[in-house]
Image 1: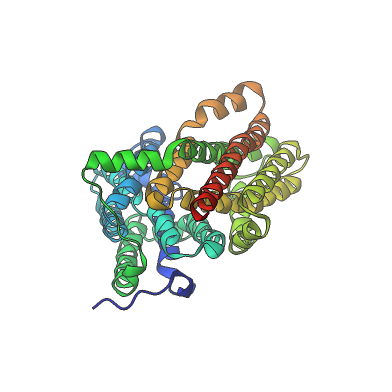
Image 2 (image 1 turned 120 degrees about the horizontal axis):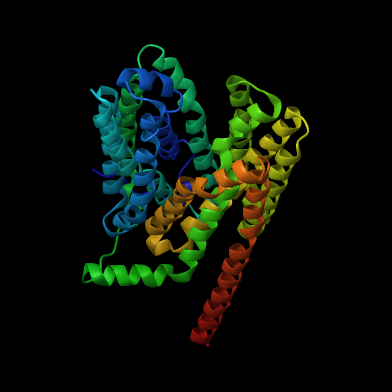
Length: 411
């Protein structure tokens, strides 16, 4: 029997923990390829260029399926969609650890990415459904911190487990995913009535029309914000280690330690990022943090020594976690009736940017100047202020129109 539904404000951090751990799970299950790269080349007997196909095989389905995963959850239920996502992701991760050859491993990576598209954005949407507006930013801050922690833990735990056999990280992460799924199912059994049920129209066509009307131009602006922010914050990240080696002759291990300061700053500041957004407001908080991102990137580009670069990289991690928390808060509040769709389109734009950004960052790095990637990213950060201002002005106009309508109805 389902327990009486709690009010959203009654949920403690402990009761929301399965959703935060869900944010940590995806990066861990899908982020072990880089640290196991050399081992996987030997295990499958393939060269570097062939094994590199595993990265887009995972990332592209992850980004593309997010275009529809949130809409599916809006039209069905959060519970069903999350079960599909975590269950499918757990099965695919275990199967990746059992793959007998590279062809099957690559195919399973596609399935992994597609299933993970039903986890991260739907966790955002579910938290948006059950957490009251005054606590929304800090909740998104905790979720972003968990996600970043997973990104940091994946190479660490993957490397430790991979020393035994490359299959072990996939098996451990996949099986632990089933424990998390059981916890999420138990949560829905106890508190599922706190999540609003989906309201279907007369037909699928009617539902899609209502969804398009609810999202409209503001969703295009939000997706644009996500795309630009991803270019600014993580776009040229894949070139940073090479830059450190070319600029100061640092080893791969040293470069890895330096680049880890980005994640360290995000994990340290992440739990407080929501409070900063609540203190300054979403739009001012995002604008201020993106200016901070631009300044951090300029410091990294101008750094005369690697310790100065470390300072810039740490500041980049600190300011970017605040920016992502503010943008995630915008995503879950933009269209409450279609929160899943908004969250998944937001995530899709974010990861599509990472898939295509080498088209412009690599030529800049090779043909203009290595440091040009930092200034280009800083330009993206400042350019984000334009659609952010447009979205803010639209929100104010719609708010004033709604207030005028309410006054007219009450008179």
